Structure formats: structure tokens, C-alpha cells
Length: 103
Image 1 (tube, rainbow, N blue to C red):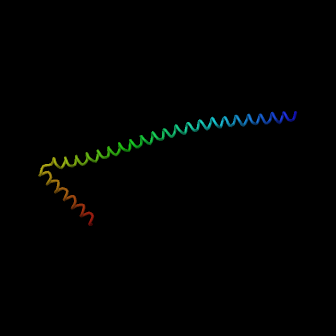
Image 2 (cartoon, helix red, strand yellow; image 1 turned 180 degrees about the horizontal axis):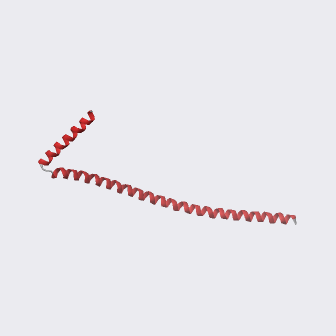
Image 3 (cartoon, rainbow, N blue to C red; image 1 turned 45 degrees about the horizontal axis):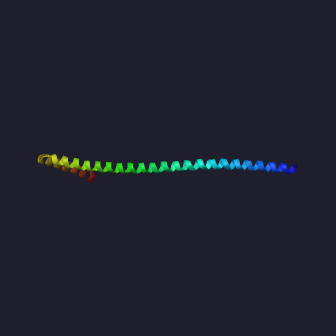
């Protein structure tokens, strides 16, 4: 009778271990699937980030080109008299700045 009790205890412990292994295996599968899902989301986020960085670079380039074009258009639209007046005003401003720096 003692042997059957030992046998029952051993079977019970084996069943307990089997259920723990089953639970751990299920948790592993869930974690593995979640990890793959997160890796896919990360890859997508990296792709979107790269696209946004490219868009920013294109926009900055466009802004720079527009600034240069607008500046050139501004100076090209001035008459000779307006250009001369602008030169005089700039020279006066530069002189004032030089005076303040030197004092």
C-alpha cells in the first residue's frame, strides 16, 4: 500500500510539472508572438520616421530656394534710385555699428 501511495504522489507531481510546462509554453508562445508584433511595429515606425525626415529635408530645401528666389526678386525689382538709397542706408547703418563696436 505504501508503494501505491508513492506511485500516486509521483504521478501527481508529474502531472503538476506537466501543467506548469504547459503554462510556461503557452506564455512563451504569447510572448514570442507579441515580440514579433512589436518588431513589425518598430520597423513600420522606422520607415515612417525615415519618410518624415526626407519630407523635412525637402521642405527645408524648398524654403531655402524660396528665400533665395524672393531675395533675388526683391533686389531685381528695385529701381536704380531705390538701390542707391538702399546702399546709402546700409552704409550708414554699418557706420553706426562700427562706431558702437569701436567705442
